[in-house]
Length: 291
Image 1 (cartoon, rainbow, N blue to C red):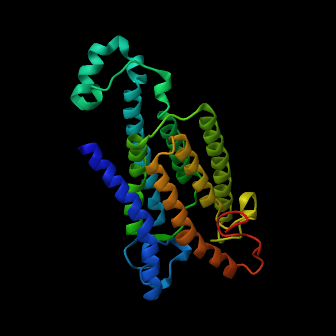
Image 2 (image 1 turned 45 degrees about the vertical axis):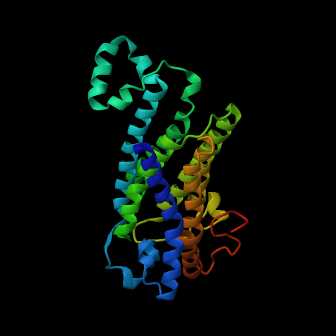
Image 3 (image 1 turned 120 degrees about the vertical axis):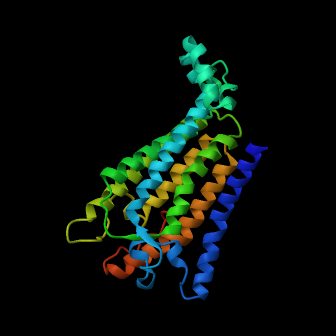
């Protein structure tokens, strides 16, 4: 009953994330942009919204910290399910199992002999952990914090986002993937991750002293205005494929497409066009050559 309830709540979270932002945007158009502060931040915030329930954008670090540790717990649960940890501690089972029973009787009952084929559900969770670790390190050592703000509602949603991803992977793994699919998804993940890091580094290099925003050039910035978001979509498509086409992770991919294509990237593209007279007209908004 409880796992079913968790899955229902996760589904509701993704469906709300997919449908509520377009609804808010539609209402904002009718009300003169009154509610768009809920979904925008930084340079895209209107002056009238800059004093309404705003917090520093650097608080996004908490987003990655909470996601990092929550997914570590999810990985621990999965490794217990497939038997990797019990295999490593089999010689101290007399101590390990009673201790685990005190912390989580449900997990203690799942200890099974290790089988490599059964460890396939670990792959998407490991990829997610790699993504979280990289983004956490970037937020500490690469991103240059400024005085940009975001709405507190955005922060609350962000703090729920990665736990929802971890739960989606843990309760929604649907089927085993072939080795070819697994290799392909890992390749796509690494390829998109390298480009996302490169794009983040380009943005960080523009934040020089006395220059708040500059014209980004290089890598996929030559193709679109927000390539880091396009990379994000590819990263989570890779995790979705590696998870055996988990329906919950599929909902996350739909959410990202809706959020990035309709909410996040159009204001940024419009701002670039307005700010820089020499902005390349051939650059698309989000998806190279298409949009």
